[in-house]
Image 1 (cartoon, rainbow, N blue to C red):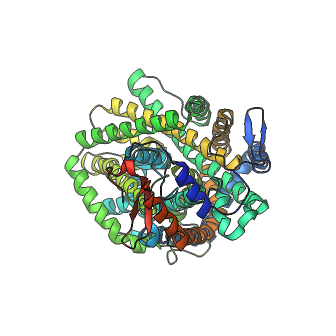
Image 2 (tube, one colour; image 1 turned 120 degrees about the vertical axis):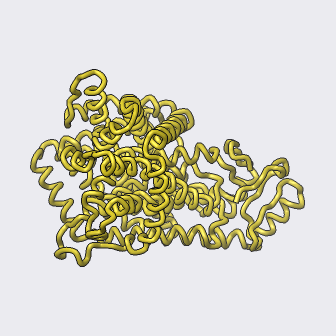
Image 3 (tube, rainbow, N blue to C red; image 1 turned 180 degrees about the vertical axis):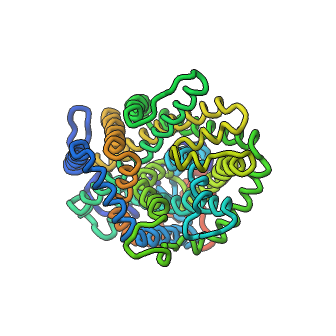
Length: 585
């Protein structure tokens, strides 16, 4: 099939998919919605979500310092007592998604056997990457390696090669595991929406267990938890992004204009207001004009900044480091993936891992409904294997190159150029690390300006994409919702990020993530089984006599061309007019 083609599913394909694959139900996405004042919302999920969010914001603001103390206690408690659970479940997600890709279910096509790709491969990768990790990579790509360079934690102990240990740990946190979580969630959402015709909400994934009850309180509860996980995961990314934008503006103000731009909570809240206002313009433009174009701009800017640092920085050092880092990461991965600090401290105490791995795993899990639903929305027409491998490997490999370039340039500056980046990270925070690193190389002002602009555009795409996802959840799974509603959620996301910054800064953001990620991780565990049940049923129908008879009839009538796997399972049906187009794997 041609990658650039827009979605054109014929009536025959749609009828076949509905007749044989869709469950018997007279319910439709958003069929009980309330439509009023420019909103189209679910009568239970929307008002309850909004009420609980308002309650959370009010309590955080009113309690002040008490809220900060509560965040500290909750953060330490979850890290101390539930860290092992986070480590275990993320590995289960990794194993599950690989099983789906390389088993007989890998040839199943998202959307049915005649579904076509909605976006080109380039646009698809740009959108999923921009939505998934853009802000985070900008924030941590220099600061995290330098932090681990100074203290590599208990896994590596007194390893004399602190540079390699620092990069392996950073690879681990940004590599295959987070994208396995995203891929699992995205696959479940895409399959049950496009292959089963169910609402594009999390409740639909549980159809094999709940049946029609997904439209009742069990389903409402699942979507409510998903809204909170998405909102706080998004607020964390926006909060981190705005602190780095603030640091970048301070750096540029000092270096260019000789003006000290204030750094702190107040200017960061002001920045959230300004950038959220910009995001509403992208929201109003819609998915194709707004998110897609901005995502592609992000990718061009990222490649430009990456190429610049690679060119003017220690190129040979970075490329040699990338090769060595990748090998060391792959060798360490089996043991590192299951490491829980079990023998490095007292039971019930939050250790080094809590501030890093546990926070990241909670962040990725809380972030997964957002990224998963977004990539599900844009992945119709791809096989399960293509989807999994694309989501799992390509963005991770790009992250490795990015981290090796910026982290390697930082370590080179620290060890070879007499830099003090490790001290800067320790004293001033991770958010300033990127800009301090750039000062050791030519045209620092230009590169710092591009870096700041890139974080701003990532902020906008994250806010835009996040509002799209929460819209799906709070509108009963409808694919198209009023723009007024998306703008409302974009403003709400900015407000929650601002409140978390005021109520406790980075600690509040981290606590919100791991606290909402914990119950959602349990939901994802059950989801592994329900997705398996769905794929098993799909494969069974594809091998059924009834399906074979329908395919034979369609072939004899000369309407379509049938493409099968080596096991003679139909994986694609396309019009005869497209027979010259190359098929995908």
